Length: 386
Image (cartoon, rainbow, N blue to C red; front, side, top):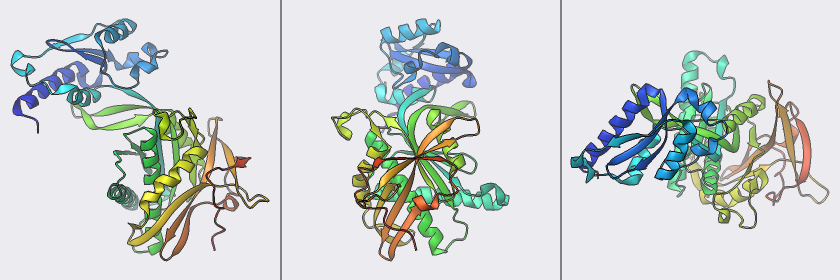
């Protein structure tokens, strides 16, 4: 529990940062502690594209710098850092680097590598009356909250964030390690299962039909203003959100698309210390183990024995399944590689399938390429739905 002096110390720093932020005109690029307070570097937002076109990695990770690092960044920006002198009566109550890191983060922009993001989209959203749209969004938000709660109950420590796209949500985990990305993917499986079971039960007629996509890539995290100060909830934008938006444009109702990513684990021991990167197929293989923690989870008033996810393909002569990769072309003429995923939900009342199987993709506007067998597909595509 923070003492009154500590709160005053943090409020003083926050007020000083807010003054330098100038209603959102400036962004904090870095800070360093001094004997008498802090040294901070603020840069006008409109200069960022030019200043950091060849130095984007400066924005990766923590904004806490050594004095030498901060001066080097200041030389690139040709802007002098500003010294915040903390009153002597408050210096003894300094909150530590962790508190300052949280405080300063709200005034900065952070580049994130290997960020997993989900995009869930309500099918036919624009065709509904306005009140129905609100109800559908609230229903989807409820499913997100239920899936989050179930994940927490089963020991998945996920720090969830989401922002609306108008007819759906971007969802991400603030922990963007390999393990955190697997947690987010597991959360997506819970969300889709909760939504599908709710729709099948027919208890509520306003549970939306969804299409969804999952991808890992780069993005920038930032904080929007709430009044005259930056808010407490972060937002993301970047290559990963753009890719997801292009993927979802082509997705069919009920379809689940996985991006063709190649990501580097921050900790090589998290998947395989012998390999430096992981792709969609290896990621799905790793997700099988993670999803085992949800055995006997209760979703939409039903007991679910297990959840498994597969990349779809075609049955081979040895009864194994290969994997198909699809290339979609967006409205700007750019191409994006994706995989189609299917989820098997084993429940007490029988098995159900989420997503679309290979034979259900005749209307999917994409070029198919058949790859080698999926190492994760240790069981077949579990037959057609009847």
